[in-house]
Image (tube, rainbow, N blue to C red; front, side, top):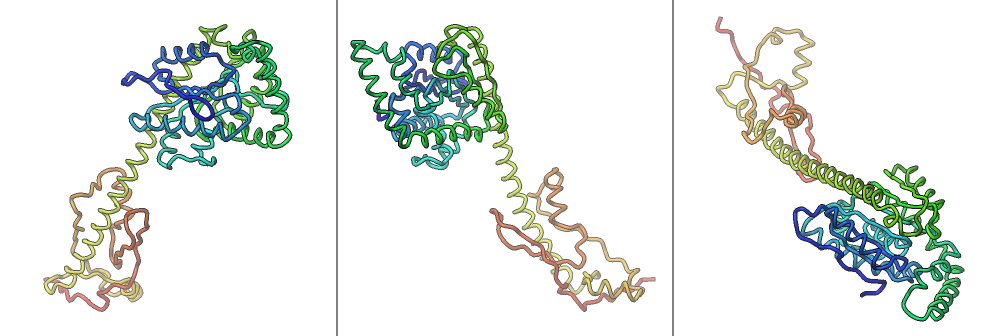
Length: 404
């Protein structure tokens, strides 16, 4: 137990056959037996389950919800550091308000409690889907009394009259909270649920028209708003199942929908990791090529200086000014031919690859007459440039004579 609720592993197996982790967000409206049935369902599909069970008051006191969310994420992060795998959030009933929306605040960097930046990024990379069962619930001004007097509360151990009296007292006391800060908390709650679309993961919503707590109109509006902002969302609606009993009344359809969604979440995770790997690999390759090209160009420039200044050489590097003078004068020097030469290329550069050819052609021009290559900056994130300046060999002319 901890402030705000409890957290435990419903199933935690260390095996390569484990496909991922399901993080279940439960509230007081779900019984232990119901929750265990869901743990068994996801276990049979090859997924471990991390369960957080929020206290009843978490939905009304955000600091309690934040405390539970932070402890939950730290536990999840420790597991992902050992082996990164797809993570699917599963919310039941009012649990998004009791804990889940605070998890979104933490991993998106908008909450008062924060993980370290690397931890946040790791969790974001692994979150691959969201499932809502009889959820989300709109905590309007009269819903506290409905939950307080709901059958799930009245079935709690103890004399029924005493439990009912306590529930009514809690409901009356919470009315004062509605008059002060609850509406602003409610707006923050919905804002964070919609902002979870930034995680770029699919949604599965399981609901019923016969649900007396999670109104279908509220859920339908939630789904439509997510779809309008570009989220990948699927809604499955039944007609005869009450709150949190869709799996009990429609076990075959429920299991098939969840199994299909988990496969989709696994595919999303694999595709994301592949893209991240390609991006990191491409960045490293470009950095290495840029470093090699800088060395190659410097070596080429130094080699050309040595060759041009040698007393026994018989070719010259004309400047741009000299080139224009010869064009205008139309002298016989236009017909002179320079001896062919090749640039020394370090063997570490692979100029025959596709990326190498693109960078090599762009950075090292094949015709270097009249150009002096200079580099500034470094490889890590800084730019490098080539500048054109007058040739240091201005005025040096060749006295080549024809042997004929």
